[in-house]
Image (cartoon, rainbow, N blue to C red; front, side, top):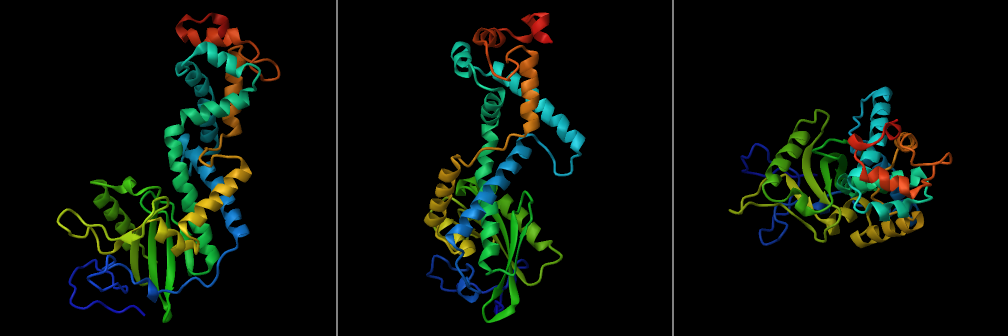
Length: 331
């Protein structure tokens, strides 16, 4: 059962058990030996199933983020954005083509859906870096639920916090610690002057949870950076927050999944090899591809089967901006 810390007047101090050895690099960090440990190890087959689901979830979320689709948007509004994005791909194709001749040669005979997918992913590459973070966020949630170590694991889905996990104490399972977790790819994502603000926002989510029972600990979980954990301090050695820890990959993955960092990355690699994917590609909605195909057809760039069949037309299309196109090409 968590012991109260005596003679501490800080209003936000959370009274969960901490490591009190001042010579330890983990001084004031959570004493995880007081928590319930993993009762089982999820099978490799189950972890791989979780990875596949996490990839699907992340790709779907990436697609919606790339198109700026809000969760509460109406189907009609979503369809409008799909069509606009599809037409926009043709404009992107012309505007950012490096070599008209080589491009026309490369896409000759290819179907518009193949070309459209490639254009969509290239045009949104800067946003797809978020995909890995979402993939590991979903994977952590699935595995944490599967280990049966936690009383509950809830997907919060906020910008400041990704999920909440409630874990009992070993000597009194009725007492709990509430973990509010924000998953990041690398530690430098929250580095420098951004870190204090990120801590403040994450703690605000935790402290304002009206359903919370017991103390809370805020965690920045770093999915792909070797190391253990720490409480970050400023240049004067003062903690930004005594209730917020940064968990690097060698601590983060075993805590939530009962697998090591290397084991998890190896399993992700194996799944990606099985799926023949890079794992960081946003799902391209079929409606976007159809709108792209319609735009290509209107521009006279594809045949009745949807294939780019005339490289010279493609060169002409790329080289001529809309203002100088003929009326036939504008239709």
